[in-house]
Image (cartoon, rainbow, N blue to C red):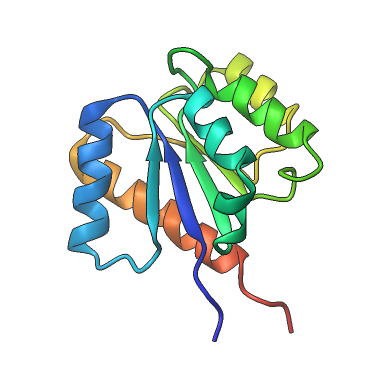
Length: 140
């Protein structure tokens, strides 16, 4: 049986975190979840060998965060040979061409624009989770 990836959610907005937790709970999401409030905290977790050894991993992250933003975190993940294979999905309210172009310089697995309306937010986060879980399936 294929083990679903743990998901490290990197998000500083308390409302978005609460909304994600609600969506995960209401939809019986089976992925184990961990949270980091900024890029510094996320990178510290990701660089921990013990954290990486505890099973498959994927990252969902925002771009605009304090201490270290998502673009810098993505750059550091992709430049680290021990981390660069981790699927990273950008989940941001920004649909600015400049942010998209800068993010894709560092090869995110996907980029989803986060909806502001609660109904769409749930659909969007479920689409992100579905994408992550499907991308981890073995190819026949």
